[in-house]
Length: 99
Image (cartoon, rainbow, N blue to C red):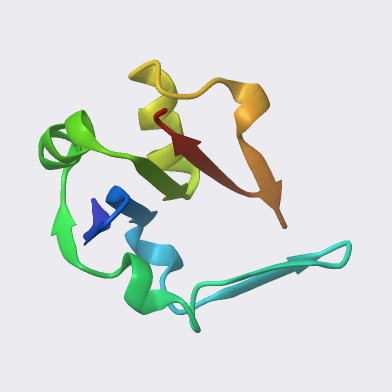
């Protein structure tokens, strides 16, 4: 299960997805920080499974993904490769843009 929130703006559709268990936590290593407590509202929308996430990501302008399961899913869908995925304190994340 994932938390997913869709943000519509003038530039398009931003889809934010995060593994559920990561919301509310902060990860730091090597001077880099990922604060999923402060930015929980950006990711915490509906709880969804892979089918719902797949439907939402069919039409995104920007896709922000955090967590092992979420990033593995977008890699399996061919939306990102391992070079696009970065990790902070062992937690993978990716930002994907359609042009």
